Image (cartoon, rainbow, N blue to C red; front, side, top):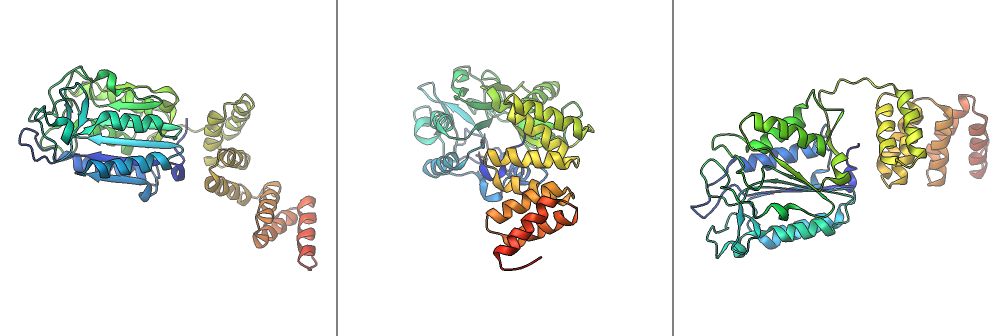
Length: 366
């Protein structure tokens, strides 16, 4: 279990809140859904995506523009690609699912000409290079109700499958999703946001996609809402979106490091990284060092550098010397000298010799 790597992750948040077709009721809560989900995904206490990597486009009217945003996100994301949509879902005369846009017509003969074909979205997700692809759909499948997004049909159940993608759907294909007319959020997204922002005493340290679904599947029916569904979880279900705000665990750093070593030896590097991260956050320099190495191995260089320097700042001379060697080899002799001096002053002979060699290359003496 781990959080996404923010520089290598992308999110695209879509939703339609107003409609020109009088038979498709407006859903004003959708704009709040999109705005506040973006806030959580970009918060340092949330998923910590850069703002430019979390594109929120409520009421985008043009299919081509949406396609360009989706294709760009799919091309850039390497770790997490998250796509969210809220609005009316419509079934065309061909039995295909379409996601409504502001100008979508409810006329069966025009749905395919005016809506976003779910098949296009599904194919783009299925072929994206991201290691974890997540689709969150807060809609249902006809769009003809006043306080619900739709009356129901089961014809789209199989269409929610997208190879290698974890799909979270707000309701089964034969039930409507609820969008109370006076509420700030739709029912599903409202409870999702409540969980991400406030946590749950029944969940572990990280709110994984699987834990999120299990929470929503427990809470929403108890409030009289449809039971949400999940498709194609695979390993993506173990990826977290945020830390649980109310998790009260107090890990033993050394035990976590030992468990991380064991997992690393048998090739379970994702679980090992999770153990090292917990121990590092609890202040273990050894965990910080090992975590930085795993992060570097999987290409998360900026995060690796942050943890490496935190480990060096902890006062371990061996780690300070190691950071000095890296700075020396990457062309930063000023930082290298600083780390070598600190390690040498702490009594590490190897650091003293490295410092002597570095100064000699610069025509200086100790």
